[in-house]
Length: 531
Ligand SMILES: Nc1ncnc2c1ncn2[C@@H]1O[C@H](COP(=O)(O)OP(=O)(O)O)[C@@H](O)[C@H]1O
Ligand SMILES: [Mg+2]
Ligand SMILES: [Zn+2]
Image 1 (cartoon, protein in one colour):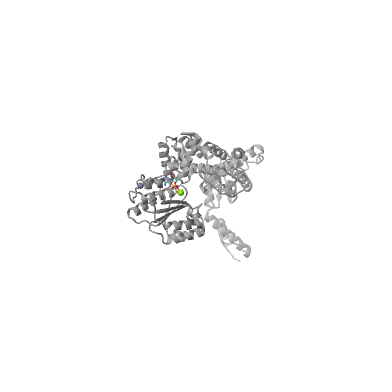
Image 2 (cartoon, helix red, strand yellow; image 1 turned 90 degrees about the horizontal axis):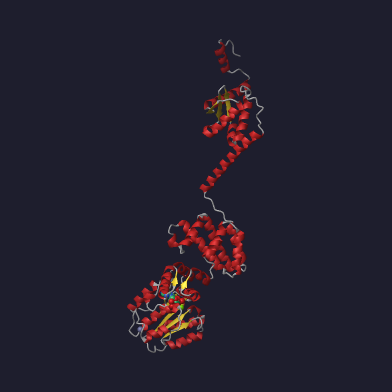
């Protein structure tokens, strides 16, 4: 028996074998059963999804010697001729090569004649969008009044190129991309029955590369088998498909995460020398980043990532080292350059610059993290200042010459020293003292008042209070008890009152009554005359 490619051997022969086009199949089956068939059909969809296959099954259903049926026998002359493509009543015309007006005129001539030996004369015109404008016009005449024995089945991969006048006279069916799952399922069935050993991950790689086309998936399987025999390893797939392969991409990612542009560029240069397809390489990088992201956000990694468990383990190791947002940035950069590469005359440089950019990615920080790190920095600065202060003390003790016994000495000077020393230890604490006041120094207490209760609360914190009291003790050279209070409201009022009073005195130049009264109280006596 001569060798037949998988796609042909596995062409579905009945409706129920057509995968992933249930909406089309069911409608056609209903129409056949209810005898409500249209005269012209338009099948649209990408390559290798079952358009020609379905057209032939429909042709068999209509012309089978055993009668119109949803399950043609497949054995009668008419059926086998259709299967082999040599039925005189079922004409398969390639629109790409028979696209002239003359071709269509000839078709119109033939349409007139009844079928030679079947019920219907069926024209399957593939790639119908390739017909010239005048050919379409010629076709339209036939479509307007087709004889009853005629059926048209048009197929196209570019529905948008079909004139409205034509598509409006057809019953239109859109064929879907075959799902990834369906492709893997079918490939498993095929490899199982053909005695091919191939792992799930390899099937997944093929399915992904096929991008929704069952025929492409089957052709890739053929290529791999002719390259590697019936025992297929993962690397075989990578070589056949011209892929860089998981291990190499993983190494690229390692270099990206290590932020090492030089080895990264060297690795890329090797690929360039080997004549690697950049788009495939970028696609693999993108997919790798996608898998890392999925791994980070989902617990269902086994379901969502089609890699072996060892490969997933390697991904996990890498995923731990990076933040999610870094991975999103990586994905974005790669997908952007993938688009640019298609349009550019200098793809190598574009990819190189993108690779460098990938090593420069830094994680975005959440507001929470920024606040946390800022407060951390604050703490570090403070502790540095404390260090600095103690160093200064060791290196140049500025207050050595202060006569610390002089606690009864000039309050202002002492207060000044306390403030300076505190600032050296902890700058911001010292700053708060600037708006405060040294109220009193007694033998064993020092009282300081603060302008408001917030500053007071801050200074009263254990750590701050300790710093302040040791500083005061150092300046005074003795143990003291530190009393902290808020500059009281009453005192403030009194101050204001006093201020007003003295102003008034200045203005009037007279003696204040209150002072007089106080003097009378202290010395006893009475006012003899007021002037
Ligand atoms: N829906 C499908 N179910 C099963 N196999 C399919 C399907 N679509 C395509 N194939 C496989 O691909 C081959 C080509 O399919 P075909 O119908 O010619 O695609 P097209 O949509 O390009 O006309 C078939 O022989 C079959 O092996
Ligand atoms: Mg086709
Ligand atoms: Zn038959």
